[in-house]
Image (cartoon, rainbow, N blue to C red; front, side):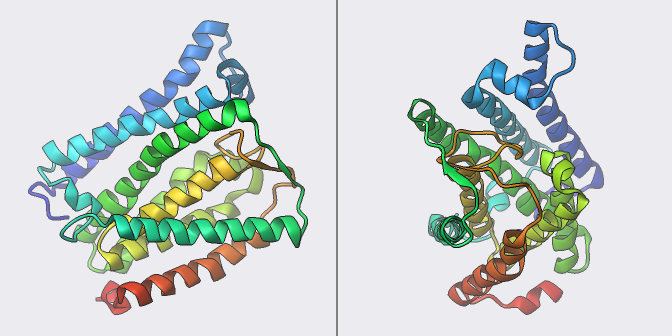
Length: 290
């Protein structure tokens, strides 16, 4: 990170301020519910029933907008760094790269859904609800984009560059940011359902995203991938146990288990994407070990 202020205290202060802003803004969801219903304890189902799915979904996402603005403010005024450096080290941010990555991963996810439906015949049902879907689409395209951008700026921009300034090898920075990315998901309901083994999926996904960000010198590809993945989970295929409960087009009623899709994603689809990007953008892999 080529900032004028690279002290450990500046990093700690930025992370604390950003974390507090995210926690406080997220806590308003429960605070409003408790003050209105006089209920001190509640479950996600209670909040969904109280707010409605779309409103609750919006309230889940809005804190990430606050946290993103706070993070960018800290980078600008605590680190005294150009905000553009968090997005890319290239001359300008490449929307083309974002679109390529978004399209590649979106197409693969749709093909995977088709395989699940027609070959393995999983209990996935059409779930379209006209009265709520179009509002959901508007919320998703705007606020899922902010939520995804916050995570990419934090982990593949700020933290990855921060670790790179302290650690002697780039692969160490990639691993450190990926471990934190995995641990960030520890509070997700998926952990309770699948157990700690699912953290392998989150950590290796973090490794993949950090790796392509380092080699491509920017977050465009990682952001495009991450955005396609999140929009697919909110607009195309949903279920009863994931962190975001939405009225997506399809709903998966199968028993939540760590199945073949996860391992195919990690060890077949990710390598296909990685080596496709490597060929397109002519990366030199050896530089992560330099």
